[in-house]
Image 1: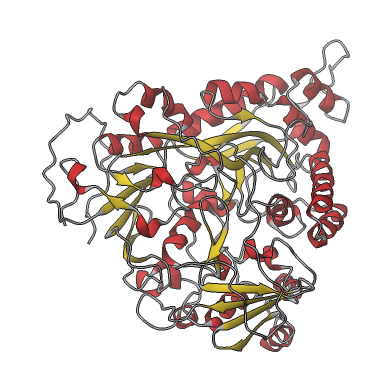
Image 2 (image 1 turned 90 degrees about the vertical axis):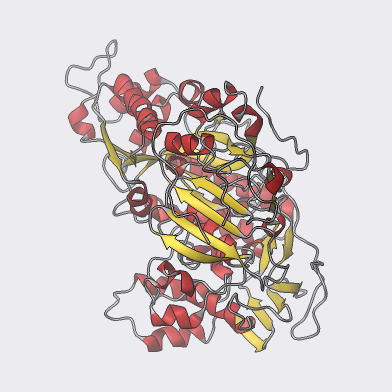
Length: 627
């Protein structure tokens, strides 16, 4: 029997853009929380208190086929190091907070930095670098007080200017490769700055940029006070203050090496619970406890994160005692886990705030034609994919906002559902009929569709999934679909630009905070993540701008629902399913089981009090690190 975590108050929070093929598994959750209450505050009076708060192993986990280990007695000294070893999927492609966007990038940064505010495992807003904050009566100005004595891991102070630097850098058009800038467009002047990035770099001058920064709505009236001025009220903005774009990177490190500073451990001098000890690119990142963390030195002495996109290799390493948490478990492996007397007791299974889709590059032929996108949505067998490939983990779904998120409408139709006969008819009726097609025997002309390619990270499990997807389309349309396996980090990089985003792939979204704004405005507004798929609908932007500015939550929800319906009618992708998190965690790992979150896209307990997590050294197995 599967061991699940029952958590009646579990709420959706989220973690950022995420991919099915880099080891995430997902599902649905409960109701969303409201932000922590704040009092109205005109600048620059005294702020109200809004919430109270007060080395590594050298070997990589073995890739040799696992033999079930014989239980060994504990030989670990009770006073030895407390090390948490986590097995993950794809190695992160970017570790710059103002450029990161994927779940496997953000979870690294969460160890190293605290933003202005934080989210707890129930999605509640908590103090972070700011210990108190206030909102002006008209809702357009938020004032943050940076906590007294806040320090970087090497001891230098962090002040309001450090957070202002992060927020300026996040919209600076001279900083290339940013993915999340659009989420800051509510800040006065942010959009104008970011849109300069589309200008020819040869004509972009520092004078142009600095002139716009004069009107940018981020100011520092005193060393420990940061003021953010918005163009209009945005009730959700405190959630944005929890995000990694606000992480206070070290300005000296960044300016001395703008493009690759983040690849060097010594440059990550943040204010999070841990510091980077070593980076072995593509394989492993090691963290040590930060003794200067404002909530106290963590109980864990060290965290070791191992990366391998092959789910079976990670499972074998876990079975052999080389890992304490397996955060790379695939639905296809759950049956194997349940049949193992030991592993089934380690299984954690709980809701997630993530939606999956067969993603189309809307700028590439033939998916620049809405009729083709409709046909492929009709062709995809969601029920079969969840039942036969994902082994029943998750639910088929044709909508975008998953159940449990405010504004979700799970009982309403979404993009066209599975109907193979209708799929062929859609193509035949819209210019893709073969010469010998007849009403009684409709046929698709494959040459009119052109070459079709399904791209995916190369692992055995991903290959099996992609064979199902491609085979599904071949069976329905009778047209070839080429399988295109590539290295996992290369896949991640390709999806960040419409010029390289695959023609067909399987991708998804894990939310950043529990609000429909994050599902719609953050993702589908022209120039946001939708740009990577060649999607833009100006009418949708108008509705979302109205929804974002509506302070009455019920009225805003109606507008967000209207916007979702419009987006779904464009069929930018074939939304396919939502799922649930499935992880393995040893019983001697103390803490993660107690703090499940629907935002745990990287590892179980990710949004809990990580600095309090512990290891029961009396129960660790032989082979556990002793130094």
